[in-house]
Image 1 (spheres, rainbow, N blue to C red):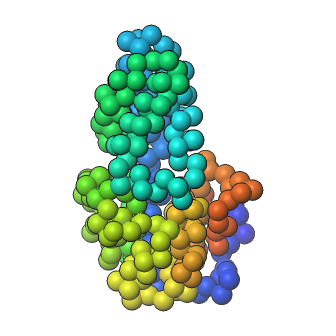
Image 2: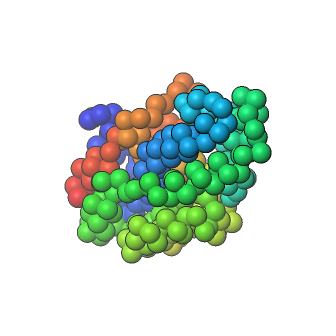
Length: 250
């Protein structure tokens, strides 16, 4: 075991014939983009609001964590991320006794900044190419609205690496629903016991994959922690995608 990563078969799972990947915060570094963008936007609007930029950023973060804390209750908002973000910002402004009418402007400013600052992780393309070179089926399974996710796929040229792409807004269902994973399995003609799914979200990625018998690999990138009330316990835990390549011998 290295960094908590189990390098042998677990729970009867065999060496895979297919691997599925989450996109946001697995292949794309959305967290860094988020941090940079909120800092930038809050610094821009704070003087006009008469508040400290850091206080505004923390208020928005507090309301966002409260809003998304139970994904099973707010999953429908994944297809309206703009609306969810505007709601969160408005709630934060109101809680701080600030002008809530600026919520839409702040939300759209963040959206533009996030797109500008979004990047691939350094290990993403190397890993996708290694999986392909190993002769395995490969797929992308991502939640969110179709236009937003398709824009990311096109900008970072991800489609050429994939045998199947499942986007919640196109497919009509999202992780952790069984149909999403079953569709991906059928597309690459893989048995659940011979497929792995790699993602950062314990609820959507790990719990969703496990319910159909897929080997679930949790990617924490040294910044996520598994709490005592974790919604699912992964079959494997990795800090970076290089550990995945090591396990595959790729």
